[in-house]
Amino acid sequence: MWRALYTFVLRAGAPIILLRLWWRGRREPGYRRNIGERFGIYGDEPQRLRPVLWLHAVSVGEARGSAALVRSLAAAYADHELVLTCMTAAGRETLKELHVEAVRIAWLPYDYPGAVRRFLAHYRPRLGVLMETEIWPNLLAACVRHGVPMLLANARLSEKSALGYRRWSALARPAFASLAAVCAQSEGDAQRLRTLGVRRAEVAGNLKFESTPEEAKRAEGRAWRERLGRPVLLLASTREGEEKMLLEAMPAWDEKLLVLIVPRHPRRFDEVAALSVKDGFPVARRSGGDLPGPQHRVYLGDTMGEMDFYTAAADVAVIGGSFVPRGGQNLIEACAAGVPVVLGPSMFNFTEAARLALDAGAAVQVADAAGAIREALRLLLSAAEREKMGAAGKQLCDAHRGATLKHLQVCRELLTAAARG
Image: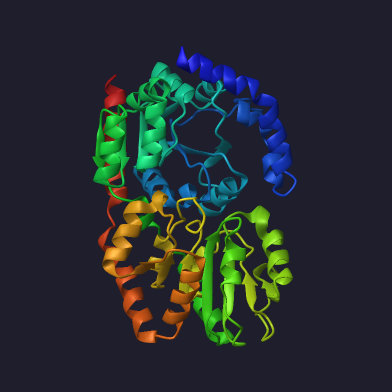
C-alpha cells in the first residue's frame, strides 16, 4: 500500500519533474537531451551480444568514486558490457570523460513502475550496483521480480538519514531488505543499514580512497603553480552561499594570495564569477586558458574533470559543502595530492573519511567560514606544517586502499549465485 501511495505521488509530480528538467536545461543543456531515457523509453535496440553489468552513480562524486570499481569490473568481466547510469548532467559528462567509449551511458529512469520495468527489459542486467545511498523502492522491487541481484556499493548512511528512513519504514524497509548485499564504508554505516532491514552488510572501506589521480593533470597543476609564483588557497567544490561567506572573511589583500574557487556545480560558474567581481575580487577563469595576472585575486575553476589539476595547484584546500548544511564534499582528493585540508562543521556525508583525516593530522576542522580562512592563512605561513599535513594525507590514502578488491569479490559472489539460480 505504501509503495502504491509513493507511486501515486510520483505520478502526480510528473509535470513538475518535466518543468524542472527544462528549467535546469537553460544552464546545462544536457538535461534536455535523451529525456525519453528518464521514462525508460529508448530509440535504439542494441543487439545483446554480451551480458550486461549495470552500475548507477547519481552525480559527479559518485561517478568519480566508482571509477576504480568500473575499471576492475571491465577487466574481470571483459566478455560483459558495462552500462552506467546517472541522474545529473554533470554526472553524465564525468562518466564520459572517465570512461570514453568503453561503456554505455544512460539516464536512470525515474522511479515509475513502467519506466524501471522498461529499463530492465531493455538492458537485461545480470547485476546491478547502486553507489552510496541510492534507494528507489519501485526500482528495487522490479529488480527482485526480474532476478537482478542488487549491491549497494560504497554505502554510507548518517544518523540523520537513518532516522528519516525509519520514519518511513513501511516504504523503506522492504527496499533495503531487497538488496542482495551491501558494501559499507564503515561499521557504523553497516550497523545503521542492518537496522533498516539489510540482510547482508559488510565493511569494505571507501572506494574514494581508490581513485587513481590523472598524473598528467597533477604535473600540469604543479607547473602552473610554479609559473604563478604566488600562494594559492583552494576553495574546493563550493556550494551556493559559501563563496560569499568565505570571500567576506578574507583580510585585506596582500597582493600575493590567489584564491582558487572551484564551484561544485557547472551551472554556477558564471554566478560565482559575477559574485567575485561584485565583491571587489578581480577574476581570471581557467576556461580562458591564461595565467592569472598580478591584478587578479580570484581564479575561477570553471572546467570539469580537472580536480587533479586544482589540488596539485593549491597550497591549502578548504572543502566546500561543509559551511552550509550539505554534509561536505570529497576531501580525499586533496589528501591524496598532499594538500593540507580545512573542513567546516558540516561533514556528515563524509563522516568516516573526515574522522580518519583529522585523526591522521591531515586535516583540521573549524566552526565557520571565518575560522576556515584564519586557519588556511595560518597554514600558508608555515611550510613545515603544510608539509607534515600533506605527508599525513598521502599516507592515509595509501593505508586505506583495498576497497575495490572487496567490492569486486562481492560482485563475483552475487553473479555466481545468480547463475546457479
